[in-house]
Length: 163
Image (tube, rainbow, N blue to C red; front, side, top):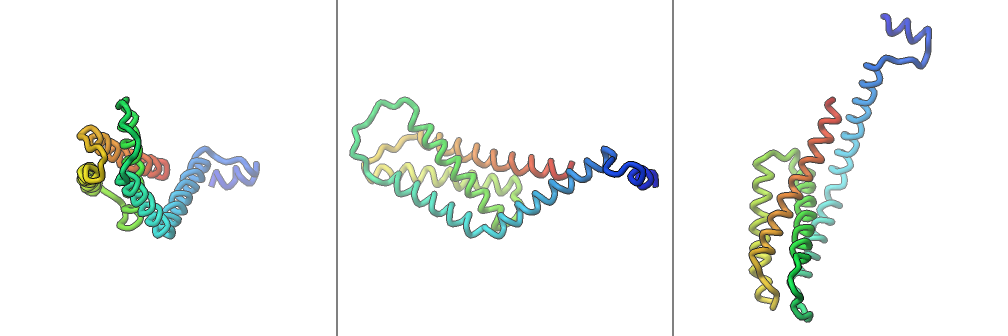
């Protein structure tokens, strides 16, 4: 009752609680709108994932004509970044297709990514490319960081909506 009288006397003056409620509702609407966009465009995200994964697979299985350069760690950074992006896209597609991911889902995705990284490294030896344990470790670390970043972003957005 006090709020109604106060607003009638001074229009446009709101309490801090009202402003906080407005921001909370606005963030909820933003999260809902983003979620709907992700669900509506899940086919687009799937096409992006398949295109990226296919490009990555083909580019790592083409024989190189360049001489081996001294390893300065740049190769490991490329492996890390490529698998980080791949893990982000896989997690995004999994959430769009199946709903909210839990710890068990993240663990399964990490295992699948580690297995794919190992298979990818082994298959490279058949096309005159170098197969190394260090590349596989970079792949696994990139996948784990990618999954962690996806979860961090998702949790942070949910916290903003709830508070």
